[in-house]
Length: 385
Ligand code: CA
Image 1 (cartoon, protein in one colour):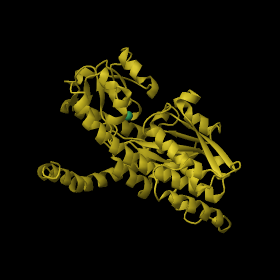
Image 2 (cartoon, helix red, strand yellow; image 1 turned 45 degrees about the horizontal axis):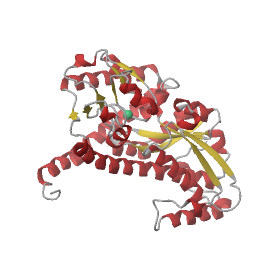
Image 3 (cartoon, helix red, strand yellow; image 1 turned 90 degrees about the vertical axis):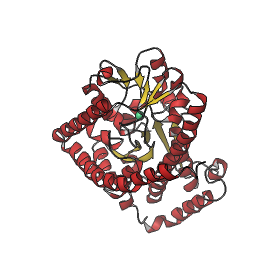
Image 4 (tube, helix red, strand yellow; image 1 turned 30 degrees about the vertical axis):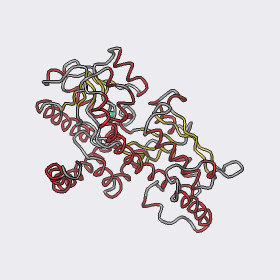
């Protein structure tokens, strides 16, 4: 059984080397001037492509960063395949069903999806922590787990049960804890609070008395503005500010629930297995490239927007949740994970592996980056003056 990961792609078959080389030349062209703006006109040869696919995303049209990742991937596939393969990207504004991407791909209506595994709790709870685990791995640690500690194999074993492959689509970096119209001073302030927060974190919030809901990105602003919800979390400064949340909520909390959220590509297995070897390899390289790029873009845009937030919206109050709240969230996160492990061997396979790697990674992170951040705070003033 072939899975779209590094272990199965080292050598394309001999008879596809000519095509692969042609694709590699097209890719090499992208590494020169204009690498980061793939030139669509040059990438498309005359004549119809051999393979035309469609990819459904869970994001509205013109959605920052996420849509860029999906389009960048499709453009690179067209360029690297010399136009032999084209992928049309359909946003949720077009197909109108952000949370149906799983079924679309499973049933073959779309060959691919661009979404997030924690949306599929109702389909298969074991997929939830493939996107994020509260208090868990950051982007760097998550990527290490995926690519070198067997994470991608575990993810594909899980998606195989649904007739799909899955592949990393990019990481948001550390997410902010969300926008609140009222300040959170004690644990009791969460009682009855209606908050948009998906995945495991939503379940954790329910256990401390909140009322978590999941709402597609395109409806968030209106829901908060009209009081349908009291609070929401979305992503980080860049994407949050572009949504305008700062205009309707004053308190912006630091994160705990999504320390490095990984998006996923979903791929229909039957359609993927029917592709020639070289196109499979091109898909994998383009997916991995877009995944790397999304983390870079997220970091860049968040840094830019963070500076802008302080300058343009001085009324926004930055807060961290009180220790009492964090302790309760941590306790309930562990309880939820323990229950998932006990309830399902599929969940246990993923969560046990993630917890084991987190334990090792956190120790190294603390002594390496953790200590360096402390040193930079102490001594970096001159450099940043
Ligand atoms: Ca989020």
